Image (cartoon, rainbow, N blue to C red; front, side):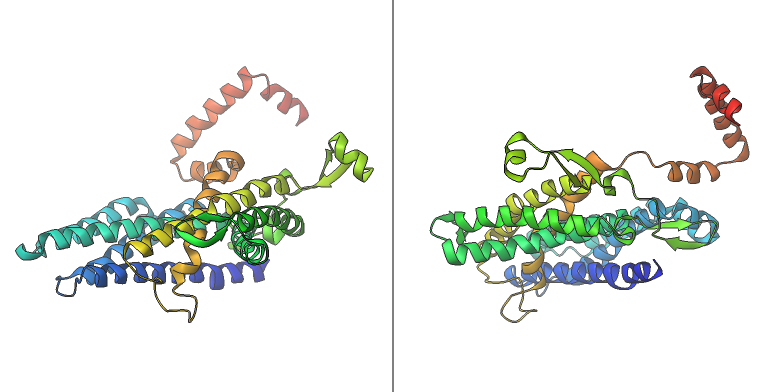
Length: 363
């Protein structure tokens, strides 16, 4: 478990941050060169300043949300957490004022173009990478499976298109074919089910990262939820006649992996189509030449960002429920009189529901 946390903190999180910074740099440099913004005062400085502000806001929100107990124990962190949004707004407002003061009469329109360019880039890149971090903290499986499904779909769509491709799919990407699209879909669904089965059996893949107040350390140890416990599922009559089985043992997460795989196969490529349209609009072949023969980092991650958003929305909509440990953490941060008031309200509610006497008799 310690190895897992070291892997998460020293490899995955810095890697996501590095990819985010590089993607931001590539898109900003395209705007810088396309609009010939070489003489705009403070443009690049302000772009990186806004990147710093947005990251401070998002990472601060994440730390406060997932490590509330740790934040409340350390006085400097507690103060920063309490006034985090005000500090973030003040930082952004400073950058906004710097932009207004940098306006030059002969460059007004171009400066506002680039101001909008920077903010759209922040929305596309930083917000999505923030959601990737959130997915990571929900459990490594929510990070690895979606990313692997996108990679699998890219590979299998290329393979099916190379060997069987005949029918063009979309004009934005002339090399994409319906045969590759359909073959990639079925291959990715099968791959997602198999990978989910393997990963669901290991706690360090399925347990979320939490701060243990008793041991004063980060942990990824938990009792796996029903989502990661084998259950019997009845097979349709057609499959029963073929296989001779009436039931099959599956992890419920494998059912959810079908939705993740389907999105990676059907909607994920539209991230690539969007990137292709963007490059055609500005008459460039690649976002950069960071990877020889493959373009820039953004060329490799155009589908991943869309996938990260879907996974985060999917978890919030269909997976995540009320978290008792977070509720208790927040209760313990209240004043004693507030805690007593909540205790009395909860006691009255349980008594009204007829649960408290039963609990007292059991005790």
